[in-house]
Image (cartoon, rainbow, N blue to C red; front, top):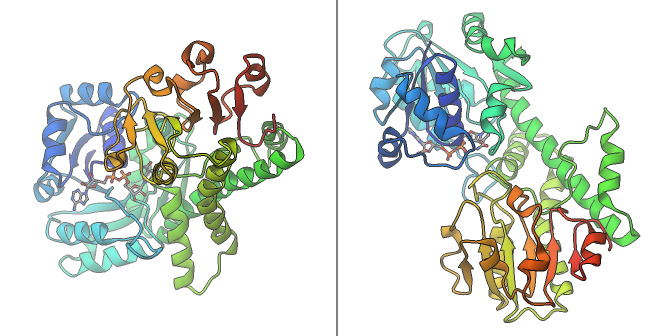
Length: 434
Ligand SMILES: NC(=O)c1ccc[n+]([C@@H]2O[C@H](COP(=O)([O-])OP(=O)(O)OC[C@H]3O[C@@H](n4cnc5c(N)ncnc54)[C@H](O)[C@@H]3O)[C@@H](O)[C@H]2O)c1
């Protein structure tokens, strides 16, 4: 099939590449010319394991193209996926849909034959209805169908998640596009993905409800971890004990820093805003947002206690700053709250991340990027393990630590407290008292 992805970011690029690998002809469009020029040279804009190889393979097979010409790319395609950003509106909670509606306006001028227009971006309930209203101004209703096909991939696991999804959700109010899309996804359905056809509005809400639920699970175990710290219980035991109940499941029950990333923070806010619009009060999700916003402050307070409130001139090293492992995405990472706060208090911060230097910390004079773990932690007073990269999971701290008084605060519970005790290292973690 002939596909066009509009917006070549994490979602548009990964899904476009994976669709091309399934044998479709795909054009990935972006308004960022620099990004398109780089992609045409095989230079990829994001860190995602396995993506580079797949791009090169499908460029070579002539299945994958990159362009910044939206109109001509749309004209050549039958199925159009909108994959642009839907960030939080400045000063509010709702999703800023300006990128979506700008694309819809451009699309309305480019429909030359029947097209299926799909929102793969996460969009609030009724966005599909609004897109339809924009398209109808310049086109006959017979010439297009607007469909919601939310994307559930996780950064860092994106190719696997795209290729072996738990489910494919298609929200369409017509049967023709459902039939075509079921066919498009048939290779994934054949490998075991469940296919769910719903109304367009239901598909839009499934995405937000799913993300809000996952954010709730993380927040829940984070709060239980707080209780564990006061009661001399290991939160990992609680997570295992709960997770073995199949009604609960073990995933997303790992205590740690506040959830971050490009989806959960903005999507939990946006669903609240949608509910407000429809005079509904989502009290559970509201308290999840509040609890998560407090989480970084809570972890910082623990840092202050660990350092006996003597923060000034203390050398603090961050291992990992991205919101999770296997991605370079810094959006809403809890390090963006913690590092500036510690910097303001006069500590001397160094950080190492496998995805390199982060421009987010450039303006802080006392925050320095180090290009290796040993340079980062050398002479540190406090090492904070912030992100669960594999690179940090089996470090030889006896060798790495030059300062005998170095303390470790492991925010991901990567190490065993008793082993650290045997090494004579003062060690703190999350939801575990020793
Ligand atoms: N990142 C994820 O893990 C993830 C997972 C599932 C769903 N989503 C959702 O998918 C959507 C996209 O997220 P992302 O992380 O890929 O965003 P992103 O910011 O990485 O990419 C968006 C891209 O769209 C381009 N763009 C914006 N307006 C354009 C236009 N008019 N024409 C062409 N290109 C345009 C931008 O230049 C950018 O490259 C969001 O709604 C997000 O919530 C993201």
